[in-house]
Length: 373
Ligand code: PLP
Image (cartoon, rainbow, N blue to C red; front, side, top):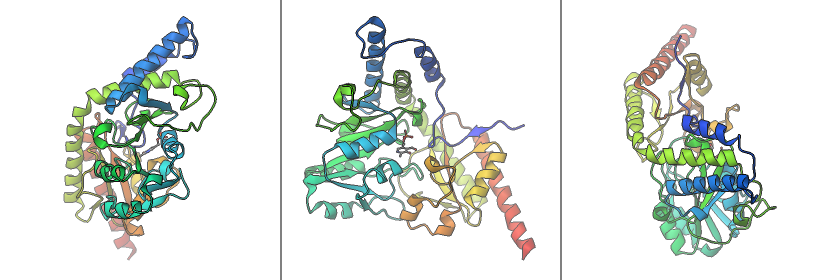
């Protein structure tokens, strides 16, 4: 019996043990952070501690952290609450950005998945002060790291506001909101070993946001609703652990590179997407021509290895990846793409198992097509 291995951290990173323990403990405390009695004050204190930890993960001031129900809400809040009438984003964003504004302009990307900054400069010429530019720091499918600091530098100089979805980058590469030079970034707890259903929009500096969820005055009037106390506490601990364990990503990157080397040797016609540009150390998106994504995902699942076909956020439905489409990957090849996204606990044994499973599948499928001919 093989031990199941989870190689799908970009879909959701396993909750860290310390986080789960703290959440279970916090759930036993009655109260509401808005109450003035001792129970309420305890909730408030825990929430503010978590706010400081989340802020520290990205080099922000604590009072600039607005807790939300996740990365999706944070991205929607950035787009809808910023007061800019024109949204310019990229064609490889997560759906929560792409669908945040139906009229948003979409910057193209090159064959490696990197945003076209020249096109952005041209687009901004018309009326930059009416524009919010939203470009993700790291892509969830390919891991490509976008030149957000460079984009922000010129866009901000011209008067545009810049937001970056840093959901996948957090805990995998260093993030410093001041160095990025952006007005807002989004985070999600469950991509860094925290719980699902909690995230944050973090402001680079104070500016008026028009709350999209209105009611009580929580989050300094910027997002109403009783705080998800246990979730926020878990997020805070996950943020601290992500910061303290960032150095482990070098080993994760070596494991990913080792996997890609093995794949290239064993399957010479494998296509590894975005291999020529900066990527998250934990992410690899590749295609084996002739082997459908679903077939690979199922074979790997039978071998006890959990990976994704295309974007995991839309898992369940196997549709061609809009990211690979934007990179002009031909549909037949895109239909063979899978994403492996690693974490600290993955091992070389699991990687070897993955490569052997894919090689066996490839040999078997190759033989079947020869037999059928
Ligand atoms: N942004 C990116 C890049 C993501 O990968 C995801 C989820 O996969 C989200 C945003 C949405 O975050 P959440 O699941 O917390 O809503």
